[in-house]
Image 1 (spheres, one colour):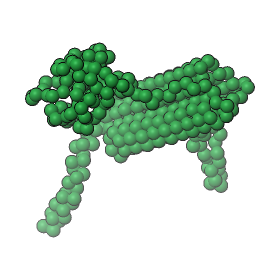
Image 2 (cartoon, rainbow, N blue to C red):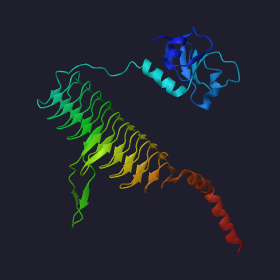
Image 3 (cartoon, rainbow, N blue to C red):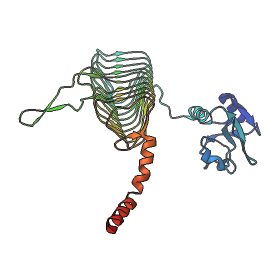
Image 4 (tube, rainbow, N blue to C red):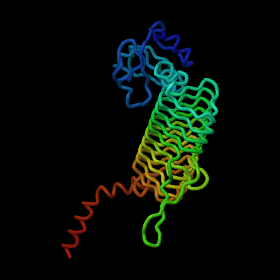
Length: 338
């Protein structure tokens, strides 16, 4: 796929600076680019590469001011990163497309399948399932009874959706996702043995949600575990029963959220974060990777550490922690002087 600088500038609503006749046929990282490729400057630490990259075109922000001559053609835009993302969509040839219903698919007679639905080899669709228009269900997917799936959703191989769960429109479920398995509910009896607490709720996933490979979302004990619109979950995330995640919150890999915790809108949660159950995380909260959250968090907070607390306080405390060995030696020396 080949584009000229003029075509790219039109796609990105950008301004050309340099040779407008140059063509590109690939996208590359700025430090690995070759002639005939396009790259972007999205982080200040890569500015030195602007002057030595072999890329033919570089996408930069409008306010970028070079300090030396640049061999490449520049295309100036409002947001170079988002402009590059737009180009990635143009070059993406691996998108899943409609393929119809395979002969080996097993579909209940009571299932309602809308137009232009694709179902892959050895996938099964249970009783009273509703599948919206343009849904793509790839190979070896198991959809249990009474599930609903909104239009334009894509479900990748090996995913399992348990009974009574609801999936919205324009969602993407990656391979081996499990939606609606039992919540971790056990109660000790008088003899100390743990008895299973039935989990009779479901999972509701709203529109425009993307769920990474091997992520699991437990059904509620009662009511619903709810993943609201625009949420993006990375691979290997565990969401416990009755958790609610607010709109447009993102969560990186290997997070674990215990039951009945409520997470607000527009939160950013780093990898390997753990949260205890029955707490509330406010809107617009940022949680650094590997944090352990043991109590509720106010709107707009930035926290880190284990146990997690306010980032600025953590950073000040960490200075002292690094010097702890010195402090201990100083105390021992003072004791010797007595």
